[in-house]
Image: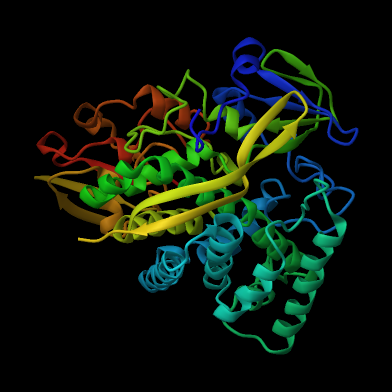
Length: 387
Length: 102
């Protein structure tokens, strides 16, 4: 097996049963594994709701470590749409030319810094740094703020020993509280201030609602981007020819990003709470229990994808669900896509090859399944492209 | 060369011309409101949904299976719905009128 390979642990269960089971802190989850069922369930917000107790739709559940409702993520239509409409234009800013230019400068500088080193640990010294710096653009706040987030380490909610770490979560919540205070006192052109000035049905967003959007923005775009960036580096270390191809055919980079998101599926799954007794893929599910939409499994479903376990850089039809599906599709997807496009282009422009020294895989324990989602660490060296 | 008419949800009419690529790319290039093309045209995001004028369906052809599977889960879809990233620009579609879905 290649170092950069992400095996599909769901294949057998997907073919035989269509579902998997997870215990998760005594609030069991039926994992939906087939592409068609995942999309259908994601679309049916009445029977499979997001607006449950805060933290319950996340797997592993965050009910015990979080009281703040993430917005618009933990709301259902029609109210969901009102909040989504407020944040949507802001989260499309990554398409603007000056945003892309700044992002390109950031990533170019980081790749240059990395080229000077004999050894770089990609998670901590590259992906986390890239993600944190890029987040200053998304929030429209000073670049220097990235240093604070980098100092928190790689996981906002997770630590080495436990899947859920209340102390780490509190660092984030306390930080956001302070930043909201600052924005109330001194409004600016940042995301906090925009939210504080926004209204839903004639009423200003509450402080708790602003916090809910900010928690989502910080938490949703951290591990996911770090894994996508790191997995891309690992893949390119074993596929030098892909860098060459991006140089010759830069027009395929957009498709390559979609394909990497499909293959890496940086977010394995997302839950829903069942509101009435029903069936999923011919399995009975009871009201007030949980199901999950297993994006990572759906993205390897060979009923939809030819050669699902291969990265086909210019895959033309790619109805992946790596950014989720339907009402709740990833709010940060525009930012994430832009990061990945700029990263691949920059690496193609500057890098000849990437050497891997040593690494440890990050394996998620999903009871019935063990899924590699990325790395705990991976030490590499970037080798410069010379003409 | 194909002339394509877009009608946006604000009832704005935009007429553009193209020679190659997909209709979605042409729409994005001309900032047609409501056509985002987030996924770049790989049929993953459904942000390029249009309703083809019924009499123009013979020019564009019907939605493919992969589009239908996606559109089935779109509450605004009808029998004239297409994801326009899957419509290639050619002389064959000259003169079509597409209404951007809500």
